[in-house]
Image (tube, rainbow, N blue to C red; front, side, top):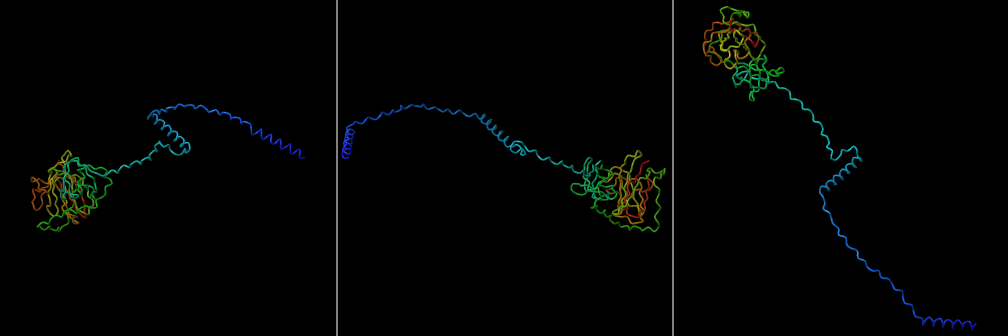
Length: 326
């Protein structure tokens, strides 16, 4: 046992000596890589073409619009104009009633030659109609912003079929009283003479063309004087009488129009039972404005035509009383 232990110790000493005297091997060399050089590439920025850029942008927008239209087919395209709502057709304005003046004439303040003249109009002038008198032979017009009146036979009407009676017809002028009292008739009125009675020694004939209509506001008479060829004649003197001579006027005078004459002798409604006579007389010469009256005196009142006679039982307006030269 001691021998084995001795051998082991000797062997250990020998091995340690060998290890101490041995020369260590040098380390293996390491390969160092050779550095390489990479050339730097110069980047050149090309100039941008504005036209090409706009074209590209338009293409992008078109593609986006197509994508949006595919996703929502009910929505209108962005650049598609939405059609405007159709406008309603305008309704034409209603046609207004109007009159056109045939020849130079006076514009009066009421429906009759007994009303004051408020102006005048020339042939061709046109006025809007605002009303008429109850008899329909005078038109109320808009004359420079105020109500004026024209005789219907001296104008040409347009769309006057629906014109209503004016609500603001002025009262007829009051005839100033005379110093001579009016006699009250004590005998029954004379019977009316038949119209269209031809008398050989009369230079004028009376035609049966008159018409009388109720007119509570004023008793009025008007008519014409004509030549044998039926053309209108001016300067013929016509006289109206009741309870004696009252008024003489000449046709066409005072701006009433060619061949026209008219009387409104009562200044309102005539007293019931009054008998009126109208006939042609000889003209004494130039007539004053409004004709001859009791205050101015009369000329020769010898009848030159048959008498138109009417007994007034209610206030009326008689028109179309016509005297024709033989």
